[in-house]
Amino acid sequence: MLDEIATTPRSDERFKQGCERFMAVTGFPAQAFLDNLKDSSPDFGRYLIEWVFGDVYGRDDLDLKTRELVIIAAGAALGATGIDVLKFHIPNAIRVGATREQVFGALIQVSIVAGIPAALAAITAAGQILSDVNGAVE
Image (cartoon, rainbow, N blue to C red; front, side, top):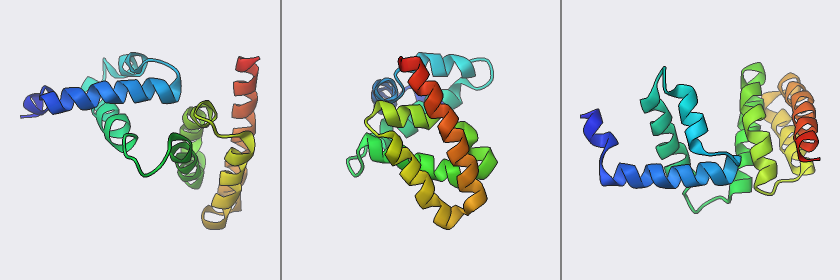
């Protein structure tokens, strides 16, 4: 049954749209992401591209910048386990139009709910990530 789902025209269209949005948000082809999962769980990679980038990112309720700032805030709320989320999504946020100030603003805002330790860890990580992003651009 999963094979049938993975090969339906609807699934193929979601995958195609997901690949296009992945490229627009991350700046690199979805295939590079999928290749990292090909030996362990290629189906999971496809599901992520279809659902996250094909469906969720395809909704009309939030623009890409707002989506990335929300994900950054959620990653910060996870504390240490969210650092990889920040490493992936902070450069994406900058790529889709967020400013450095907006990234830090989201992290300061999340401190109200997630607490100072989680926000401080995220702000520290964000400083390094943004430094790396700026260095890569120069």
